[in-house]
Length: 234
Image (cartoon, rainbow, N blue to C red; front, side):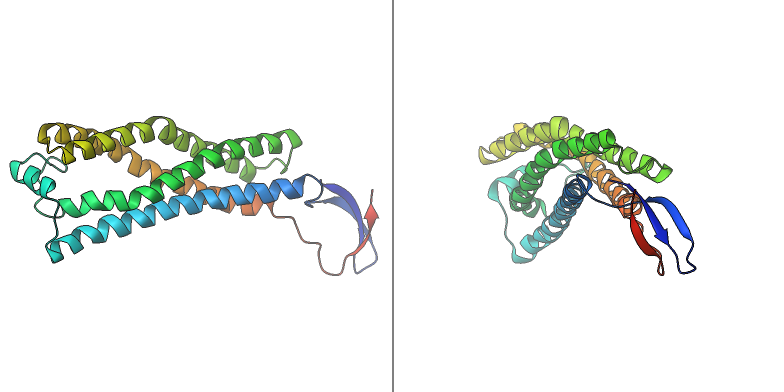
């Protein structure tokens, strides 16, 4: 906790003030907070990197090698599969397979967020109850950004995520059954939610990045000035 300490500077004069220290309950709380925050941000970065790698390269590789999914090709020739209202000319088979490749990472990050978000809420409440860190404009903004990130993630986990998983599962089942009409309907529903989920992920990432910066500013203890001699706590 913050302690009142007395120092003697290089001139021999006494200075008395509150020096920010991380002792007692603050130290494990700070460690837990940073672990949760960094793991959360790293998970979102991993999701974004996986999506860019899988959906950016596999469609091109499939086209270059002449690999395709027969059901996808048949539906594409029928005009059943559309992207932004247009029938894609190439890459749909690659995107279909890329979804399976990236799904494991997406599911792992989603599970991680189900663990992190409740723990982060508890950590915030403990910080509020313990009145640490001290009140400041930067700390207020840190909390606001973090709460906004929690709300965005909660909406994805509770509303968007289950709906997208259901639509994706139904779409894949329809593709395997060569049901073009059903596949087109489920794909349209998935794409509609994906247009919300993608910017939501970007927004959450920027909110967490801002939280990390403000956390480093508000939670880092001040260093005792050179030349000061510590006399003890009061």
